[in-house]
Length: 109
Image (cartoon, rainbow, N blue to C red; front, side):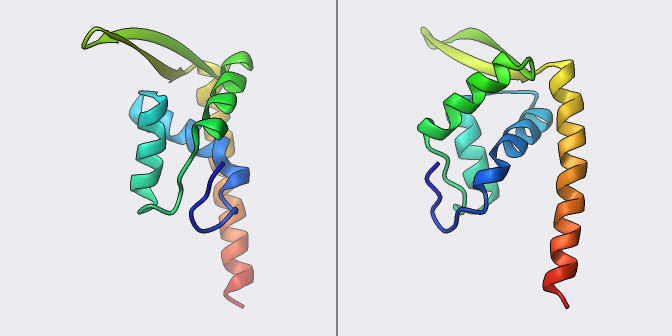
């Protein structure tokens, strides 16, 4: 994963992907990378080499599913959360919020 400014995002990539899919319903790979970059004002730049292996792992684990649609004569693979993925996203988001709360507490002492 290429990160423009720091490597703290690395351990949260799965959480980020699941959250984006929960919010946007379905997205294709490039769209995921661009949305993450946009939301972080350029801080998070995911490479294809980091994104696609994780998407394949999430799909193998039953967290996401994919569907191919023809757009302008070309196949585009969209990723969607499964019910299992939706539950996992909620759990991970709660864990992440607790983690961020604790970090904030520590760094504001």
